[in-house]
Image 1: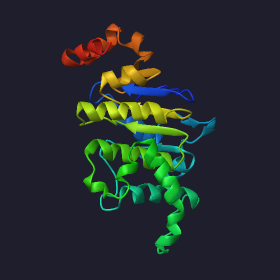
Image 2: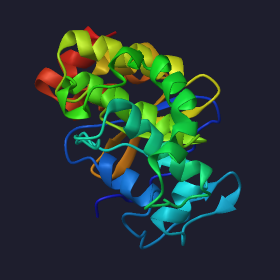
Image 3: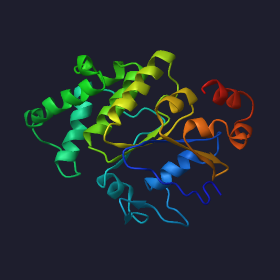
Image 4: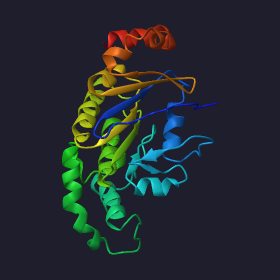
Length: 239
């Protein structure tokens, strides 16, 4: 069973990290929450309402928006146009309106630039997204996520594959954009988790192993044993 008896509560306005060894069930948990997988048992509640039977589109319209492990931007659109597409979808009530004059979309340029400033990408607004570095593509994904005005942001390994400079940039960015929002993130980099997460849930073999603040979780013998070897060293080193 990929995810079994996971009782997870995410407090409004917090950054909540979901960690665990490879194969622990973290991404499966995200897929269940966003309905890319249908739970075989249990219940998912959001803002007190049962969303267990909702489709992925309905989940997104409720304000639960996720990013994925693999960067997913429109590579041949400009950085500004990527954000503008997300704004268009939100302003149109959850649908895209094709075959319209581009001039009609210019109304979103001001808001798109404001969002790009929030993620330090405004100076790249006219650049094709394919020309951005990997770390800046991830920042662009966060900008397009913010454009949908999410209530809950689910970030799946936002610093995966990044160098130290990009990791620090994304760490600071997540902390900044999380103000007045709720963030649930899967992350392997323990220094990132230690510095920004309010609460950490540790999964092992699809079940909850431990939960609490980093100071508490990082000292838990069961957590250290679950990570083993280099991973347990990483937990201690990030302390």
